[in-house]
Length: 415
Ligand SMILES: *[C@@H]1O[C@H](CO)[C@@H](O)[C@H](O)[C@H]1NC(C)=O
Ligand SMILES: *[C@@H]1O[C@H](CO)[C@@H](O)[C@H](O)[C@H]1NC(C)=O
Ligand SMILES: *[C@@H]1O[C@H](CO)[C@@H](O)[C@H](O)[C@H]1NC(C)=O
Image 1 (cartoon, helix red, strand yellow):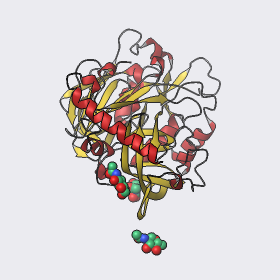
Image 2 (tube, rainbow, N blue to C red):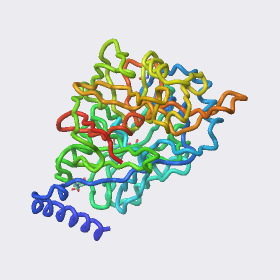
Image 3 (cartoon, helix red, strand yellow):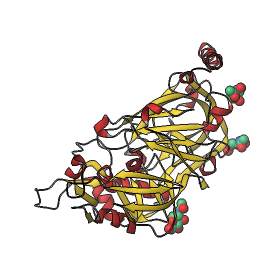
Image 4 (spheres, protein in one colour):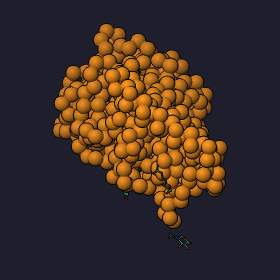
């Protein structure tokens, strides 16, 4: 173990020295990337996604919860299309144990399953007795609860986090889950969450975000995180960068929008135009959340958008569905124009093509109707006093979470 520790120290020193010598060349600044993979396979269909998203924020869906649960367990077994969950590999402890984690700007805790967890199915688990750098945080326990009473509980420890091959951050507070609710047990692609929200939102440790901690120790130059989430048709991978932005994945200039409530990455949505027509009565909060698959909107706004999309229909079992072909033609308005939904965040307007609001995922048709292939909508509707801009929005925009400026930066994404 000792040799390994010395190695880490050496890498850190080397990095620091290297950065000093390389001021002229920005590509050698203190920052690093982690590749994200869009997961294929038996991942959740839209109704199940809606349930998950709304539980996270304790919201109520317009879809009946009983229908929803039934639909999520019986529908969509074929799962031919790429679905949406971007995960990256994180190492924890010494020697590092690898976990597939969801980098989630909509929560602020870092947790993985503990070896003692009996209901954590096949997920990777952390064994604190096998890590030489682990320390227990007194007798502290934690639990994250969702609106439906499900959640995760566990104990608290500190250990080294390894991000990419050359960055190690010691003594990070980590939640070790000893029990998981069914939501997480059934999510086989994901071992744990890597929260990137503000510390005030954290349940386990409210002191500071790991991003701020890494800057304090000069492991990265700026307390920022840049996120690129690729579309399935562009290969579906993504990238998260700590310490700088990656211009290879965006076009033009980043436009920054100030955070209005420092818990989530929440900004102000001042106006919303659907195919050029104003649809919002007054400003509402918009939470930028990499950990939510969909855009979640109040019912009226969702209805207004879907009304502008020919062939879109609502069902209490499947939510909104629309013809899959609208996505590939990129033309929603009778095959002639590209139509967009424009979100005015702070002082800037961000357009998303309606065709990008249609998920890759095919939905069941009404019984007997074989003529038209329907895909799920990337928009969920709920009784909500704010909107959530999840991956459906973020595939169109590279996003930057800047803890120093307390602002979200957005620029059109580039594959
Ligand atoms: C932790 O719990 C054990 C047993 O309940 C107790 O004896 C011990 O004093 C506690 N330690 C701290 C630091 O609270
Ligand atoms: C969720 O909302 C319900 C009512 O809407 C409320 O009673 C409950 O306390 C909320 N739970 C959380 C965790 O905020
Ligand atoms: C981490 O914590 C251990 C034990 O408390 C301490 O010896 C070590 O110096 C800490 N490392 C860093 C980098 O803060």
